[in-house]
Length: 111
Image (cartoon, rainbow, N blue to C red; front, top):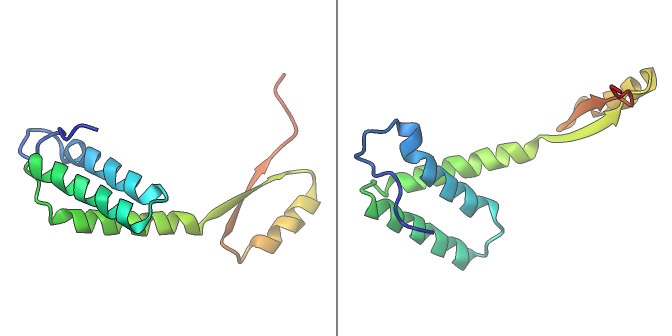
C-alpha cells in the first residue's frame, strides 16, 4: 500500500478526501487482527494521515464511528424463507420480536 492519498488541503469534496481513510479504518476493523497487528495497522493509518496533512486526532473519532456502525450491522441478521402458503407467514411470525429480519423468495422463475 502506498502512503499517498488525496491531501487534506486539496480542492476535493470532503467525501472524496476522507474515502481512503474510511476504507483503511473499515479494513482494520473488518479483518480478524490480533491486538498487536491491529495497533500496527492503526499506526500505519496514522502515519499516512500525517504524511498527507490530516489532523491525526480525527482518527480516533472515525475509528469509533466505524466500530459502532459495524456493531449495529451485526445486530440485524437476515433469514430467507421460500414463500409457499400461509404456513410460511405463520412460521415467520415467530421471529417478529427477535433481531432476525425476514425476507421471502419464491420458487417461480421467469422462463
